[in-house]
Length: 177
Image (cartoon, rainbow, N blue to C red):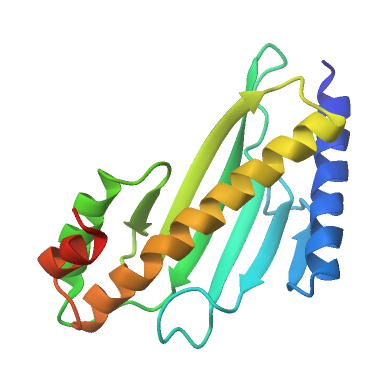
């Protein structure tokens, strides 16, 4: 499939998702590709994700830039920032909790950015490059739904570990693991 048609199909789906989220009164904004970005990004604010998280969580959803025209697979990226200023005495316990938890997640992974200040959840989902229209929209909805559901289910526990209210073993006990 021609690269321009693929990009147009993706753009149409992202506009549709943005409109649906806004219709549900969920703050969402599609940021177009530009000088400093290779791809457009749908930014979404989730105001009820995680314990004592006044700022909520910010999701960024986008298609990784296409490679060559011969690629058969596209990658849809779901990245949710759970906390954007992590610090304190419990960072080591947070890392240990994340490492253990990631082994049990059904999909995606929790991590900390290279600078060590942002706790996020990330799910990268491969999908056939030729998907367009309703089939593409369905896959994007599934990817976003999975990312939000998994992040929402576990972010609270990691934030409690970071706050020192729970340790790694307490997190596993709470999960029944």
